[in-house]
Amino acid sequence: MKTRGFIGVLMGASILSLTPLWAQGLEKIVDGAKKEGKIKVGLTVRWEEAGKPGAKKFVEVFQTRYPFLKVEYERVGGSRERERVLSELAAGKVSYDVTVLSETQVATALRANVVEKVDWKSLGVTPAHVHPDGFGVNYRSQLYGIAYNRKLVPDDVGRKLTWEDCAAPKWKKKVAMDTRPRHLEIFWQPNVWGREKTLAHARQLAANETIFERDRTGAMTKLALGEYAIDCGSFYSTYYEQTRSGKGEHIGFTLAEPIPVNLGDVVFIPRGAAHLNSAKLWIVWSLSEEGQRLLDEVEGNGSPLIPGTQSAKLIKGKKAAWYEPQYRAKAEEILKEILEAVGLPIVR
Image 1 (spheres, rainbow, N blue to C red):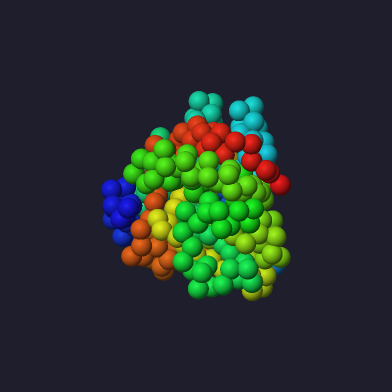
Image 2: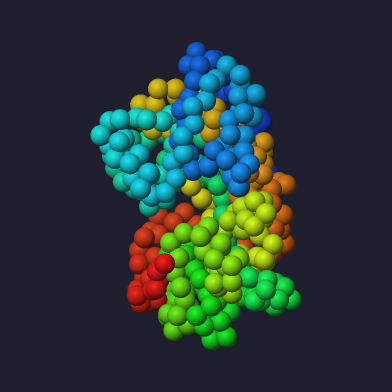
């Protein structure tokens, strides 16, 4: 599948600069933020990544740009923490000015009316990053690929691995995969592999005795140690984290085509946030070229719609499969079908 349709719209949108539209509302928002003087942010980026500044660097650069704002930062990571955020909001407790939910929690948040609706496009945010229904913005993009142990799989073989290889008898009992194989959710879409081919592939994974891991980083570590030969559907950002920390010597990574792409976390302003202007300022800045290139530096998952990011360079000229909004919205149903086709996966 060539990058067309939705992807074509995305790439066309990517050439829009934040600057002209953002400048129109800058003075009003900055004036408001100056009066507020602070902001509390709860996002997924760790304070430090691989022993090096992660969110810490974000906060430092943001405060250099806007020294009148004091940023308080906390990590809101896995599903349990995000459920806590949603439960607190539903109960009327607003702990953050900017925070994050998973795609599957969006419908619940909208029904509970806990989201501050903002016209992000009018503030210059690239339209493709604006979540449907005015919920918030998509953030921390992910590319999915195949990681391999370079001692068990020579580079000349590893670089040519395909998605079909993940279920090939040759690699029986030697393949790891995440318990939420999002790359297969993307393949399930009619314009990629389609439902039938994806479910057939899932049944082949079961026959191949694929091991399903709960922790992507843990799976990559086991891969480096030789417990697996291949880790299918792994995040490029996880591989980047390993190489950045000096633990990736024995790990190779290939972006098999079509390359699954997901625009990632949903970041938003809770209704009733105490520092509304500061929250808008943070989100718009974090989706600017500077913000996304910083994210790319600390995590390896800057937006492929921002020129110069690793993701943009890696998918250039290649076949990409984007997780389209209408299918992201029914991700739980798609995942259920895929896991049912796998049977009862061995989970570690």
